[in-house]
Length: 202
Image (cartoon, rainbow, N blue to C red):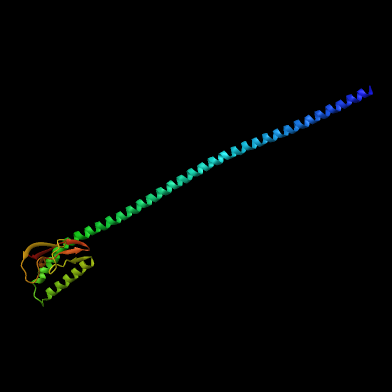
């Protein structure tokens, strides 16, 4: 009986040891499973955290694109404004030149009459000397404004500056050269206001 009891106790101890071993293995397996689950959860959380970062990155890209578009628009508008300013200044200058040219055209007949009147006056006349001084003052003012007479006599005929109204024979000048000036021509800066009316050697 004593031997059977000892055997029974030994078997119980063995069974308990086996149970404890199995329990320890189960615990180890359970802890491994828990670790794996925790790892999976951490991965999921990190993925969820990455998603909003990507969205934020996209928003940043859109903002950069908008900034670039607005910058391009501003540059284009500045270029258009610069072109408009240049064009306006050019048009303003052209309008000023047209206005000045119109006034010069109206003054030139007065200059012609001055010259005709002074050509028939005898020297030594006080009144004539006064008119000559006024004429010189007028011509100086016109010259300062950019009005200059066109040279004609002795120059080769140029349709850009001369208007031939007749042909003449001349021993002094060669063919195609202006021999006589019938009406003086004038320029305003680089533009012809009135062509010289001339006689050309045939």
